[in-house]
Each structure stands twice: as structure tokens, then as C-alpha cells.
Length: 244
Image 1 (spheres, rainbow, N blue to C red):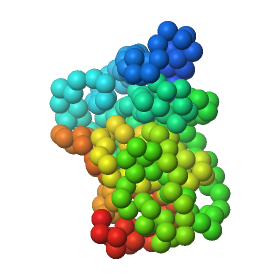
Image 2: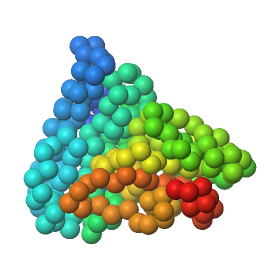
Image 3: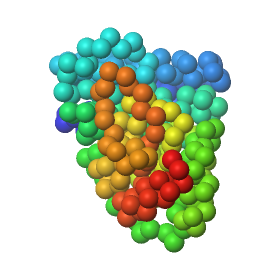
Image 4: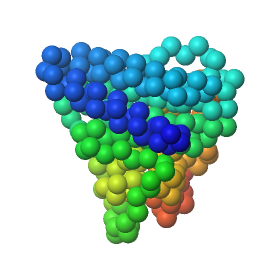
């Protein structure tokens, strides 16, 4: 399989495993989320180690021993992005399998298991026309302070949603035009979604417009902008003007 095929296959398998675990009815809430994370992580890590043994690996659910820093190719994964949403039986959670090459999010897949969909870098969707009033998707628990002022300035609306992957894919799927986050994230939260978004022609950057860099010693990556490319200049200019 190509890297993109591998990412999509592994993300889909992990998503099905998580759905089966939830459907079994043996666990719920936090316990379900924790077991889903654990089981999906085992599946993903074993599959990637088997298929790409010479690549580095960074997973939210595995101890980081730093050996990835000596690799140019590093798989960056979040077995269940939106553990809380998954445990609550919501649909806005995702599985992230991304590949950073030379510090850039280049290949990946984001599975949305409850929607039976895998968005991937090698099979981009056709983006629809821009609506007159942009929708800004934000965290339902940690919405950025500037989200509402930005929406007001652009004549748009704010849409709360769960996981980072679900929000980024909402822009890819045409359910929103802007995804804005400033409440703190890590590389596994955005690597696969950014790779997929870039493959679909979207703009991805930090909130100050600087590039997103992956496979750093400290994987903390606190803020993120994913938006339609046609809106990027205006969004970044308004963010700067709002004092971000």
C-alpha cells in the first residue's frame, strides 16, 4: 500500500474497532473512552510498525522515547481524537493517522467512524462554492475569545463542535469555512487533519500565519487555523487586528 492507502486503512480499522467496543455495551463514559483509546492505539501502532518499520512514530497514547527525532518520516497519530465525545456516544470524534515528512504534514487520513467516512490525502473531495456568510467551527468547551468578534466582523456564525479532527473535516466536508483554535493542542491533534485539509486546497497555519511544524522535541502546538484558501488573508488580517 502507498502511505496514504495505509493511513486510510489503519484509520478505518481503528474506527471500526472503537465502534464495536461502544456497541458491546460493556463500558460507558470515561471508562469507554479510555478503553477505546487503548485498543485503537494498539491496533494503529502495531499496524504501522509492521508496515513501516523504518519510520518514526508519535502517538498520544504511547510513551515518547524521542527516537522519532532521528527520523525524517514520522507517523503522528491520535487513536481517538475526542475521547469525551466518543464516550458520550456523540458522532463528532475522529481517528487520526498522519505522516510528517521533513517536519511537514504531508500524508494522512481522518476517519469519522459514526459517519462511515474516511477523508484522505490521496482522494480529495471537490469543494463547493463559498457561502455569503462564513461559518466558524470552534471547540464546544474552549472556544477562542476572538471567535465571536471574528464572526461578527465577517458577518458569519460560530458553530461549536467536538474533536479537532471533526472540526477540521467540517471545513473539508463543506459544513463550515473556518476552523479556529487557540486553547492548546499537540501535534497528534492536527497532523492528520492538516495533511488532509492541505490536500483539499485549504489554508492551514498558526493563528499568526506562521507554518505548522511537526516532529519537534516538544510536541505542543497551541493554536491552529484551517480555512478556505479564499478567506485566509482576510481571516489572518482580522485575527491580527483583534489583538491575537
